[in-house]
Length: 175
Image (cartoon, rainbow, N blue to C red; front, side, top):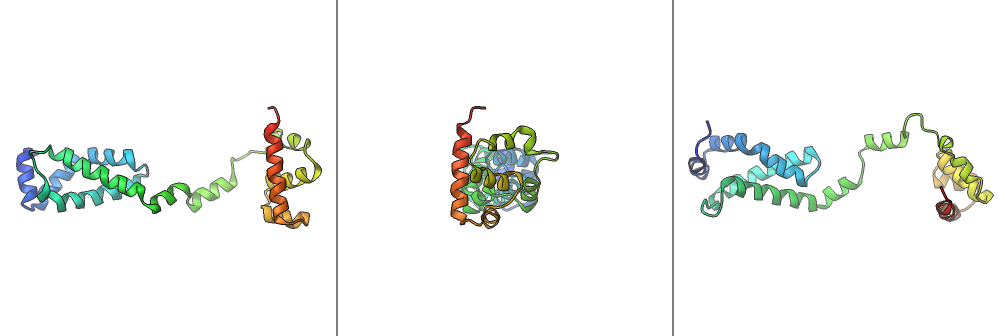
């Protein structure tokens, strides 16, 4: 049975670790939801919640029941910890990159997808021969720009220029 909030606060401020367990059992679902609204990754959100619980435990002496309810105070600590986590460079980098498993899945593409089924080869026919050849190597045969430069025996910068120009021309075509 959950003790009254006053009793729980008194026990927490007295350093009763069992009271922290009661607090966690009662409020962790709501606090976790508050964190997950800010930190989208479930594993990172769980880490942020645990870090927040440590902060709550250490700051209990500063809690003033006259300023607000225990849950509101704890939720504010959790949200601030989540915001701090999201602002870290490591989090921003992780949000922009894929794990190796995701990258491998992206490289494999959609099973059964063939560019010729949507008329890519037909669109390329309207380009100059060198543009068509480089786009074919990159997008239909799956070569890198470096590999295409070597196969065409042209500098890498030329391949990049041709690709850019091809994209411009293809972007102007009516669909």
